[in-house]
Length: 77
Image (cartoon, rainbow, N blue to C red; front, side, top):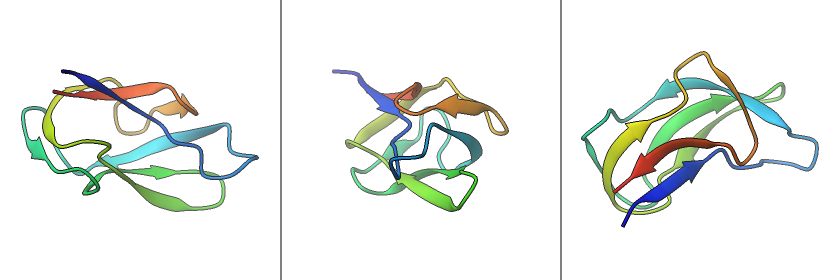
């Protein structure tokens, strides 16, 4: 089963963030809760944990790209 990785919201005023760095690459195994990527907001840089364990099948938002809260940024199978 494939699970979409979405950009989480880290505060009521957060509407978007920039993908700073993916810590895992496509086809790499990930564990639930382990840091998957870093995002930058206007106030902080934060690690986004993997929502489930599996294999990172797809990256939809590249480093340097700004995405909206709850936008799909990747896929874990």
